[in-house]
Length: 406
Image 1 (tube, one colour):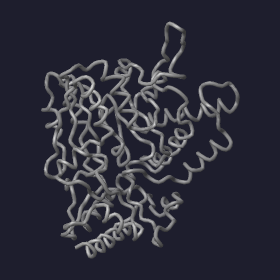
Image 2: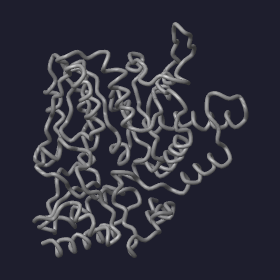
Image 3: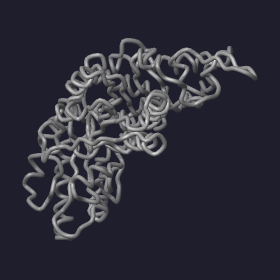
Image 4: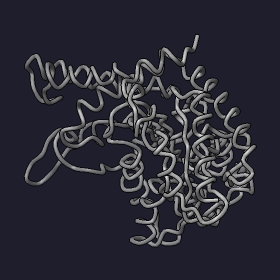
C-alpha cells in the first residue's frame, strides 16, 4: 500500500517550518528532497568508506569502486536498458546532452543540417544545439505545442526533412507538465532514418521508463530530481550509437594507454567518463533509485495522478488564475499567473510567507515563455510525498495573493 504519511516520514526536511508555517514543498520540478536513506548513505560513504575509484587495489578503493559501479546496473534496471554498458554516469542531464552534442553530433553535422526541437524544451536541451548552430551552421527547427500545451507526435515526424540529423525532445515539460508520447515520436522518426534523443529529466520522475520500449537512441536523467544528490545523473546511449561517439572530455580513467605520440581510449562506457567522478553523489543516487524501485514507479505515478486531478479541480475554481497548459495528459506540474499586474516573483513571495515553496521565473524555458506570451510564471510541481492537504494550503495562499494584488 502507498502510504504517503509513512513516505513523508522518510524525508526529514518535510517536518520543518518556514516562516512559522509547516513547509509545503512544491518545487520538485527544480529539485526534489532527499530521503533519510540517501542522506545516511552519503554520510557513510564520506565518513567511513571514502576513496577514489578504479585506481587503487586497497580495501577502501575496492569498496568505493564496487558501490560506485553497482549504480550503473541500478540505472540500467530503472530504465530497462539492455545492458549496463549502455549507461554513462555523469553529473546530470546537462552533461549528458552536451556529451551527445560534442561526441556524436558535432563530428557528423555540417552547415545546413537540421536538429528538430519542440518549443517546450529546457535550456539544457537547447543551448548545446545552439553551440552547433553558432559554430557549424546547423539549423534548429522548432515544433510548436497546441493551445492546450500538448505536442502532437505527428507534427514532430512531419518536420523531418532530407537534412534532419537528430530529433531532441523532452518526455515531460518542466513548465506545463505535458507528457509527450516519445515512443510514437521515436517510431515515426526512426522510420525516416533519424536518431532520437529524449530529455528524461522530468519524465523519469513521474512514471516508469522503458528505453527499450521507447526505442530512443539517447535518454538523459538527473539524480537530484529523482530524490538523489545533486551532481549525479546518467545518459543511456544505445550500443550502436555509443560505438559512433568520440570522447567528450579527456583525462584519467577514460584511457587505456597514453604516450607522447598517441592515446588508446578505454572501452565504452568508461571511454566517456573522464577524471575522478562524483563518487559519493553517484552512490547516493543509487540508493535513491533503490528507494524509488521499492516504492514502485507505477505506485508513484498513481499517487501523483490523483494529486494532479485534485489540483486541477481546486485551481479550476479560481477564475482569476491563469493556468498555462490544460492538456489532460500531464504530470502534476502547474504553471500559472494571476490576473492583474502581480509579477510571478511577488506571488511566490506571498506563498513563501505561508510556507509554500514554488518556483517563479522563466524556468529555463525561454522559447516556451515566448510561445505562451508571458515573461514568467509561478510553478507548483508535485512529488511522491505531497498531499491533497498541501494542495488546499496552496489554494489558500493563492487566495491571499489575489486579495493583496487583485
